[in-house]
Image (cartoon, rainbow, N blue to C red):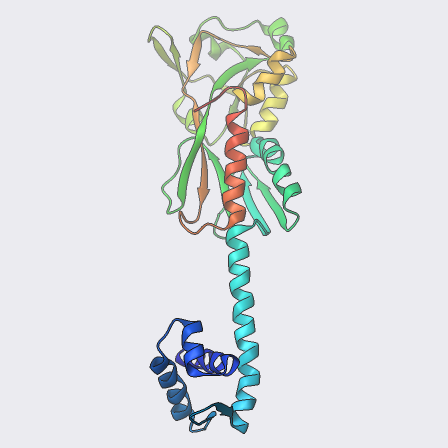
Length: 301
C-alpha cells in the first residue's frame, strides 16, 4: 500500500511538472512529496527522475513506470467516480425481500423509481418464510410484526390495522359470529407460524374489555395471499390487513366480522444491513416505500 501511494505521488509530480505543483494538487508539503519519490527510488534501487534547479526529467526507468502509473491513477479515479455515483444516484441491482402480500405495494412504490432511474434494476424476493438476508444478498427487507433479534438496522414505517373479514357468501351459508367466543364455531383461516396463531386472537373493545380466543383452523397456511383468496371465495373467516381489505370491503366482496372488536395493529419495518453510508438505491427505495405505505388506507403512523 505504501508503494501505491508513492507511485500515485510520483505520477502526480510528472503530470504537474514539479514537486511544488504536485504538492499543491495533493494538499501536501513539497518536502513530503520529495521524500515519497526518493523513498520509492530507494526501495526499488532505480532512478525515476533526474533533478536540476530548473526542471525534472524522467529517466528511462521513470518513463516506463510512469506509463503504468497513469493507468493506475486513472483506474483509481474511475473507482472514485463509481463510489460517488453509487452514493448520489440510484444504480445497479436493488435486492428487496418482503412477504408475499407486500409484493403489490412494493411494485406500486418502486415502479416510479425504476422509471426515473434507468440504471437501477430490481430483484424482488417475495416469500412468507424468513429467508436468510445475508445469503440472498438483500439490500432492503420488509418485515411485519415482531422482529427477531438481529444485527440488521430496523426502521419502523408505520402500522397496519388488522380486520376480521368474511365474504357475503360465507355469511349467507354460515352466518357471522356475534361474540369473540363464537369464532370457535366458524371456519377459521389461519396464517401459520405467526404470533397470533401461537397465542390466539387478542380482541379489544373501545370500553377496554378484551378477550383472547383460539379458534380452531380449518385451513392453516404460511401464505397470507392464499388465505385472503379463500376468504373472498367464501370458505371462512380470515384476519386481513386493512389496506388489502379496504378495496374488497368497498366493492362488497368482503364484510367486517365483529367490527366493534379491534386487534393490535402490526408494525411494518424496513431492515437494512447498515445505518450509515447507505447507497443511493437503498435510500431512494426506502423513501419511496415509506411514502407509498403512508398513503394506503388503514395504515397508521
